[in-house]
Structures are given as structure tokens and as C-alpha cells.
Amino acid sequence: MVQSAKPTANTWCPGCGDFGVLAAAKKAILDLKIPPHEAVLVGGIGCSGGIHNFIDINGVHALHGRLLAQAIGLKLANPQLTVIAAGGDGDGYAIGMGHFMHAFKKNASILYIVMNNETYGLTKGQASPTSRLGFEGNIEVPFDAILTALSIPSGAFVARTFSGDPKTMTAVLSEALQFNRDHRGYAFVEDLSPCVTYNDTFKEWREKIVNIEKLPGYDPTDRSAVFRLCSETMRAGKIPVGVMHRPPKPTDESSNPLELKLLPDNIGPARADIGLEHNLAAYRTLLASAG
Image 1 (cartoon, helix red, strand yellow):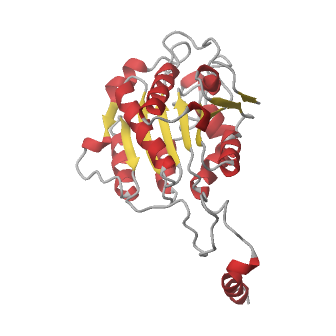
Image 2 (cartoon, helix red, strand yellow; image 1 turned 90 degrees about the vertical axis):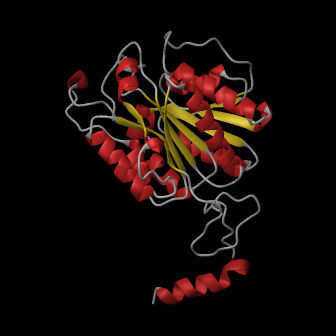
Image 3 (cartoon, helix red, strand yellow; image 1 turned 180 degrees about the vertical axis):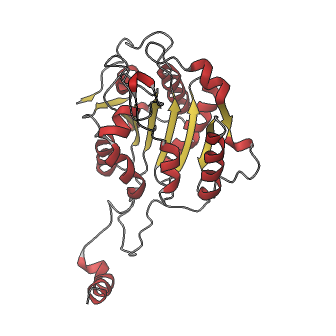
């Protein structure tokens, strides 16, 4: 469902961390002077997935776990749009895990924000893929999206923010959106967004977060180095935040290892021209290599 009506009344619990994401997203869009009609926000399922109802831009309410597929489809249909996908850890890292992994490979110039509160807040506080051991009887080691993102070879922008620090979050979202608008590819930002009703971690996370950008050896162009810093920080019982991967310039969403000719305003392999005329030599090479 696509909406163009005015924002509706907010339904989040007072104090919800998602308010910080909403405020930072609005500020980033305003700072970059993105016209409302040129932006679209795809919301997922769950409390956070309603975010598109509370902001005066185009909105899409996606299927459970499928917001990335729908967001990429929007970008393919109109590459000039600024496309933001926003959902929760349950939506993105459970039923949506397949799309989460492949989005890094597709390298579409969209921004994906995951509001991670380590619980299924809308359905009354069950354990989610990121819940710590023991939470509501959870016996599974929590999934870490940042380590996963850093382990996938890609030219994506990767960062983690905290709803308790809206100023930094706004700066990160502004950088991520500009990265998209420069056609440099996919941007992923995980926000630590506490659920004040079922898993209020504001105080705990505020005490545990460590700005990885201030650690010795930090180099956002080196995914391996940042992966090591994140792992060491986590082993020390802390939570790394900051820009984890900032690809060096020039990077381009049009990268294609087969060197197939790409359409104007392409967004990576999904918009490659696979016709015979432009790609005959590449196809002959592929056929020859297949024996």
C-alpha cells in the first residue's frame, strides 16, 4: 500500500527509542534538502515498521520481512527517488534474513535502517534474533548484524547508532543518504533503539557503548580491521557504535565483474543491460569457460 496522505497520530509508547530514529531521519532529509515528493519510506512489520505513517513523505507498508525487496523494486522503477527502508530486528533478522544478506550483494542505492530493541515489542516482548541469552527464556546466542555486514565483501556504507545520541544519529543518516544520492550503493544503519515497555535498555546501553571511531587502529576503509575492533570491543562486554565501513572514493553502484554494459542511472547488477548487442564478447567468454 502506497500512501500520500498527511502523517497520522503516533502510536509508539512514550519514550520509545524509535522516536529518535524518526527525528533524526526527518532532520537528515531536511538538511539534505530532499523534496518530500522525491523521497519514499518503506516500513516493515512491528512497532518500528509504522514509521512511514509518521513522516510527511511517500510511504509503503511492506510485507513481513520483505521491505528490502520492495524498497529495491521502488529504486529500480524510479532511480531518482531517495528510498529508505526501515524496520525492526525481528522483521529484518528473522523472516527477512535472506533479503538482508543479499541486499549487500545487489548494492542498490537505498538506505536500510534497522531499529534493534532485542525483542518483539509489538507482540508483547518475546525474544528476537538479537536477544541476549536468558531474555524471556532465550537459549540462542544473539545475532550481530554489524559483524555480519562487515563479513560480506561489498562497497556498502555500514554504521551503528544509538537512539540516546540523536545528534550523532542525524549525522550518520545524513552521510548514508548522501552516499545513496551520489549513486555509490547500499547503506545499512543499525540503531540501538530500546523498547521502554518490554526491554528498557537505555541506561545499560548508554554505559556500554563505545565509539569505535576513537579506538586505535580504526580505519573505516578496512573492513577486516573494523571487524577485529568490533570483536574485541564485544569481548570486553561493550557495544561498538559509529561508522563501521566507509568505502573509499571512488566507488560506484554500477560495479559489474562481467563488465556488462549498464543502463544510465543504474543501480548495480539489477539494472545491467544483458542484451546480446553490448555483451557478445562477455557471453562468448562465459560459454568458453563452461567448456
